[in-house]
Length: 132
Image: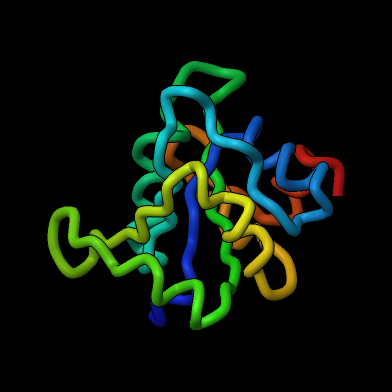
């Protein structure tokens, strides 16, 4: 996977904020989230969405993976960080750079996978959760 085609795991609340931005921008980070860290492999994004995000008690037992593309120049500002092996790599984007990241998104932020209680969900079924 190319570093400038990152993926990001989310919970439903964050995904709804992306939807409200017409699928073109990430919402501001919370005070305890100083870094936005999209990942570089689908397997790692799915692991986080499935094994971490979808195992919380209902109704928050959902995890989603999104894919988005950023410009090569923007990607070059954030070297890939190895956080546990070749399959566990992330871009570390400081919260104060989020406006620049959003301006560098090419196209839309697209949901590509969904999980409930560690099980894959049909993406069309999951889309009903965000009002598609």
